Image (cartoon, rainbow, N blue to C red):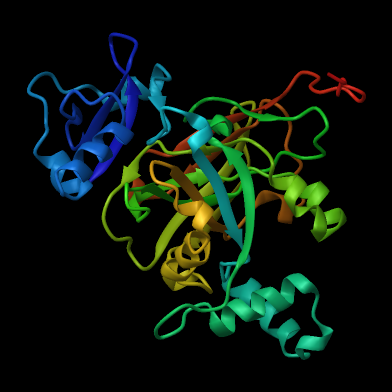
Length: 331
């Protein structure tokens, strides 16, 4: 099932189910968060519950919702401070050429590897154990729900940023139930959006490079994922494609299993607070920065994964001057 949140004709948020003939409202629910809470209260799964809640009436044209910029992130928390956005890196195998180059580097022995390559090797060796938990991945914090841009909305690069590059990724969407149990609502496309120039200066700047906006959606896909997913990431400038590349994701193309990445995120008690929402990025397989593309304000990021329906499209924007040096004042 593919669920969306959108701005309805009354100007409020509504939940819709994407079908072959358009978008059907789901039970008058005003958010996927409310829909999930209702499913939990009835002891039902999200998909099974949503299937019983179709609202009779007109089917909305999906294309029109996109054209009128009425799509929202597929799930939001009523209090964005209770939505944690995070991610894991060094999780994907990349293209055949990249894998071949990687294996040549790994053949030299672990003592010759950079810290990043060493962590990647650990994932290859222990990220998919036959049973139980495997090696823990790289982990990073991005922000709260306030940083999540809607499909079609600008991804804003801070005035101090050195870069604002795309990262096409799968995102896991989770709600923590009243007993502290993480409940996976489903998956979505994400643009994790990072400052790769800052990160390249020193890998210890990774945390700084990730404290940025991101985009997720437009669709929440329920149920298990196919083992392998093939998509396309591109950048348009003044209507022309300036960079385009296919990418592969899904467990068959990853060095970690989804279950292993989930375990190492939710093993921390702080990540299991009842009522919290978690949006967790699972890592990228390709990015334009690696091909020496330098993005500019006005560029448009387009990320497509056919199994997730509509593409995720966001323009790049530069923020006005933000926090000034000396801006902290004594009380």
